[in-house]
Length: 139
Image (cartoon, rainbow, N blue to C red; front, side, top):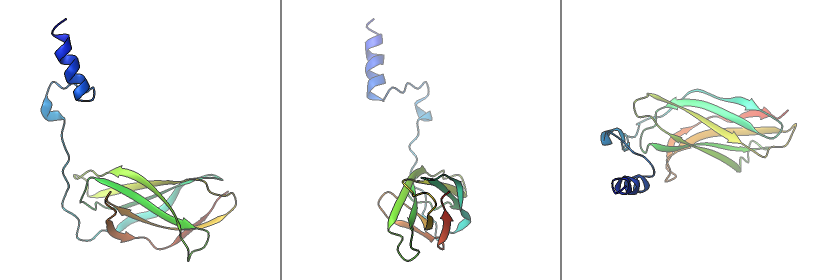
């Protein structure tokens, strides 16, 4: 019974993660920030309903912080993309590209929306890539 208590304390302190090899729990440091990021594919609608859509695109791996956000700026007027949706993503530094997926909620049925996409680090610093303005109409 006395041996269980130290193990239990360690389990609580490590968030319930018991490892036989402590090296397997790794911190992913920031990678070198890419000099130039470009969108390789998309953006495109992955799915759409009357009230929501998922927009997907692929870019070079932007580097920097492993924590990133895909961002969609949208609105019903192409000159006023005042609404914003963003989704968290964790970059894989061993991949040369990153696939971003952002869910845009609370849309109106049978409405034309215009949008542009970009990505950024948690501190708000953008990756230097923005798509042209695209459009979709909800069903």
